[in-house]
Length: 81
Image (cartoon, rainbow, N blue to C red; front, side):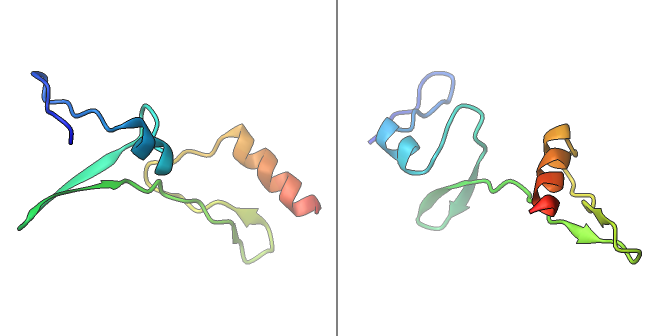
């Protein structure tokens, strides 16, 4: 059982946060259903490696994601294995 505070916030119990890997900044979606509310963890968009016609690898654009130096290093590491 949880309570809504004056600011409209609901605290999710630690055991549930741990079970579902929820941390500060995790995005949740609330769906209104006939029998109540459903709270689901928003899945982050994923980036899949693609290959150009000339054989070069690239990351296709994904709305909401930017390519970081870490992404490029991970790609380089994967290609060297």
